[in-house]
Image (tube, rainbow over all chains, first blue to last red; front, side, top):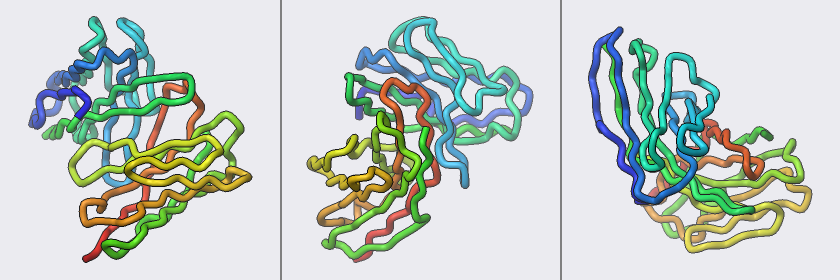
Length: 114
Length: 110
């Protein structure tokens, strides 16, 4: 694995509670991403970061916020979790050159909102 | 980004070559073709990518048609561990937003 740690690996929470997922990398890559994966939808981009304090929305960003105060950490927050946010969440990092960008993914966080 | 079309599923025999097609008829000149795979419960794994030339690495070969409207990922000697969902993605270099479709579920049978 490319030095990516997601925590927690599993979490069960109740509707309306705040939840924060953490992605930690040891590769010093500039770009970090949060995806969610649901049956029938493949992987969908939630938010991404292109540097410390530089973030932007993906295609399914409603209900989520992110923060990146250090190169190595990218946090995903559900301010008030809903059952529709039950999903598997993957963090990814990328290395880039002029002709290549490979994504490396973490092992995922299984989140259940009851 | 150009969209891709892949068959939802395919089977192949262990030890044989697996040829996975992908259609990207609206691809533009500066879009690369990337392939990833996802083994059950794991994060996706990069396989290979290319622009217009055929590419080969230790995992697979990528054949891109001359008009670039389609491509084929070739796993030369499929093993049971190659059973996974395979995603074909086209993207512009420096485009941050990369999204995955449903992919092709490949089952390698003994």
